Length: 400
Image 1 (cartoon, rainbow, N blue to C red):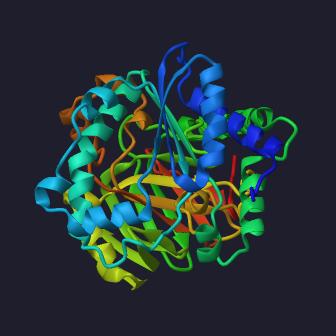
Image 2: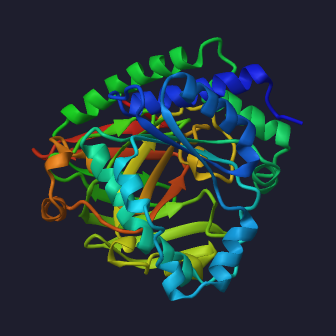
């Protein structure tokens, strides 16, 4: 039995296509769009596929590996198999114009107990494919979006009924609105005003203070804030990729998370000179430390983000980073990501940035990108280049 009506599915698919075509404005007929879908999200995937074909796109539809396939691969493969990249993948990912991913996991814990090193090997092997797409995105040749479809597993891990979980997604994505795309365009315009305000402030550092943390990042040269770009459905966050070298203090993630089959709770990171020098967690500590040892960049940050509670309707733990990183609730949220940075936060032409230029600007590079979320009441203060301090975020909302 479907959790959504046919009309809701149509609206959800329309919202995803809004996201895809907002993330990249240059789509044209016969562009190649990859749709990746977990089996549990098939009914939404079929509607998205139908709408994209009707719009004239060349659609490549792929189901994701099941939990059993994933587990068998990680447990039974050797080093060479985990480093394998299928013939044609480099050519395909260098040429594809769009990517829609429908996340609908049947299990969040099937990889528990699998050696973290094995998962890291696969991430490292596939990083060049992500780099290809990132480079094409910088050139305006590629765009992507993603969403989550409710499953029994997600609802169970979030301690909600499937009906409650599906309702939270519907409300967050505005698929009960008469015209979801119109609603998203309205939010897009409001957030554009906040981004303009932030980008006009000559910030040097950003300090985030709450009951559990005192954390500072250095914005870095030629940075800008992005957000509500169509990349994620839903997405309410306003984020940037700071100069990782200026990270200091304690960051604390009070919201739990699932990753790589593991449940992790209360991550605490202490930074000095840009790197996490102390890493702890109430649950899953060993796993966190192993992930942060994947490569050098995995213990440095690639993203700093704030979500305004006035936009986000998400007020429950969802056991899904896409929703949890956009948590609204009473105090909004702050999240940082360890690992790879987003170079489209460069206030210039990202396509002209060489690898060396990115390093000089302090953009972090890693096979890892892991969002860690804090929903506590917090005050965020920017220190401007002239030494003046400006409160930019308090009580869950921006102060512009």
